[in-house]
Every structure is written in structure tokens, then in C-alpha cells.
Image (cartoon, rainbow, N blue to C red; front, side, top):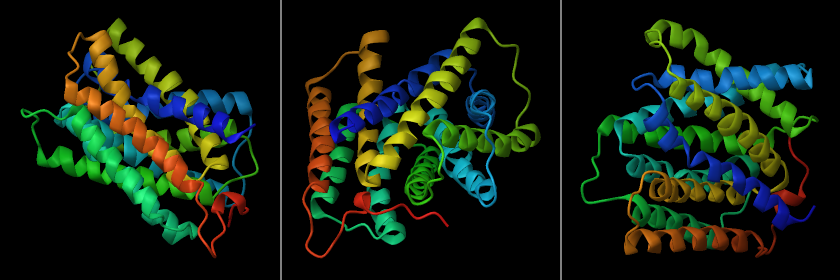
Length: 298
């Protein structure tokens, strides 16, 4: 399969993640960030694990726990704190620093070159997201902002390590291991720190089912597949599509208006994603693209 197909398939994941904000605010009970994160990960992970019937072996037990914590337990917990405490636009803008963090971590952990064009693309993406969803009335809750930044760092680390650590299994199996590990790590914390959920409504059940089966299981299979084939900075730049989708869904589903500034933001976001892909196609003298090197699995 060619690179363009890999990009398109991987891009489906962040496009679907853009619906997280509207599902969280419209369908889920408020005030249960840990419980929501756990119920998004664990049932989906166990379902996939029952399907693949393959458990980790050796050091992959520990690596699955580490990746599950970074990509799911810590990231989703902080994501839902940010989503609950900040307007969706502010939460998405804070989280959009992730591609810049991935570029730096990929240099440290994978030896990937830092390309100036990649920095420009990531910075432009952050600006595009800000144009897209920030408003003069956007509130900046300090805890929400800190949670968003730490969440971006957690997932950025998970993205780079998912590229560095690649087991000889399918993306479906790799996703099952991580989702299950992430959910299991959250379970005791949920029992200790959060009260039981109230009686769930039909809307709540629909929201949890969507986030688990579509927003977690399906999307992360595509995401980890992309990480096994593409440069981490390329994959992470696709994350800018998430806030763009969130704004478009707000327009389509909630009847929110699209201003000229927001339309400009969509154009800038799409341009930054394109620029990021172009940056990886420009070879640097004396460097070999990590995408062409064998993955490191220790």
C-alpha cells in the first residue's frame, strides 16, 4: 500500500476524535473524568483481546503497561479534565502543542532529524487551531490548561515510544494490549477517587459505547497502524484534524455559526498538515529517515 493510502487511513482516527468534545458534553454525565477514561478503554480492550486471543509475552507485559498509561490512562484522564474545565476550543488549542513535543522527543529517542519545515508546520497548525476555535470569551481555567499541556506531553511520549517499541504482532493486537493495560491501570484509581456513576440514561450508554468502540478500538487500530508505517511527526501532525472536526460538528450538529476567522483556521490547519507531510519528503544530508530504518524493540 502506498504512503498516501496510509496517510488517509491514519487521518480517519483524529477526525473521529474530534467528536469526543461533543459526545463528552452532550451525552456523558459531568464530573467523572477518570471513570469516563476507564470505561472508554477497558471494555474496548477486553473485547479486542477476546477477539485476537493473544497475550503479551516477556518484556511486552511491562511495555504494554507503560504505553497503556501514556496513550490512554494518563492522557485520557487529563483530556477529560481539560474538556470538563475548559471550552472545547481552548482544550483543543492547548492540546495542539503535541506535534511540537513529538518532534523533540523523536529527536531524543529515535534520532530523527529536526527539520525547520516541520517546526513551521507544527507552529502553523497551532495558529490554525487558535483561529479555528478560540473566541474573545474563551475562559482559561489554570487547572484545565495544565491538564491539557500534561496530556499532550503524555500522548506525545506514547506516540514516539509506540514507534520505537513495535512488537511482531498486528496493530489490532497491539491496540488490544494497550487499551486493556490502560483501562486496568485506571480501574483502582477510579474506585478510590471517584464516586459511583449515577443511573445511566440511554444517552449516557450511547455515548460510552461510541467512545469505546469507535472512538477507542477502531481509531487506535488505525492510529497504531499508521505509527508502524509513518514517521511519528507525520502521524502527530494529523492530530490537527481533530479540532477542525470538532468545529465542523458543532456547526452541523449544534447549529453553531462558522465565522470567516474559523474558515481561515480550517484552511491553515489543512495547510499545516500538508506542509508537515512535505517536510518529511525533503532528505537531509547525512541523515537516513527513521521510517526506512528497522524499529528498535528492546
